[in-house]
Length: 120
Image (cartoon, rainbow, N blue to C red):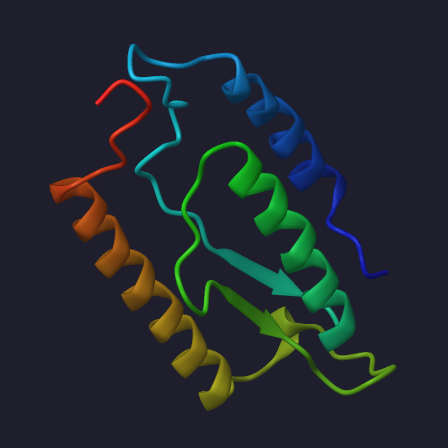
């Protein structure tokens, strides 16, 4: 339906508490941590959902790597769910791998040199 699910909304709402939970450098607990998303739905819905997710995650201090969303598109108005596929399509596998590689790379960089905060 072009929206994130209710569980995702609840998680994001809970992370809203991060805006007031900061360390002595003014950083939220999520600073220096990386977030990615896996989305099931049509392409427009996936784009809308990732935009919604990534803005909320950014607002609560998470870092978003390049190519951070992986989604299953399927046939428009189709009736096949991802879980019903006999095998994962190559494009989905490749996208998921790139998503994971980018996230791990960025997390490693941030682990070595995280954000300084306001009192550095």
